[in-house]
Length: 167
Image (cartoon, rainbow, N blue to C red; front, side, top):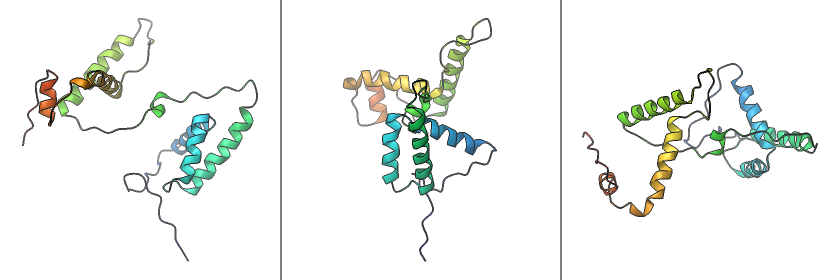
């Protein structure tokens, strides 16, 4: 008798189970909305070959793909819009506490400026991640100016005051 290994995530830990009611339903609905798109069809077939995808996920995606392909043939069908955060690649960065606080304050200020007198808002919601993406774009525009073998040297080379870590 062979036993299959437990499904694992990239970090090597078992996936966290959804405990709130309705969360599992929302996750499944979100998956089925994105599978019908052509780009997602390619990623689904690639994920079937990936070793960390369970058979249940693959069969669920395949069922959704079949259902979506039938419904998308009608001329009245609309391709679901994929939220911006799902179109982006996840990265993790460690930042200083004062940087995190300052990012949050800037994001709050920008979101407050979005509010109209009528009570509505205009534009998209600004988050810490929004500001980080813009900062990365700004940094990459000056990539030829980046020199140094340490964070302090790179900062100094860009005209910034280097941080002194406690240690």
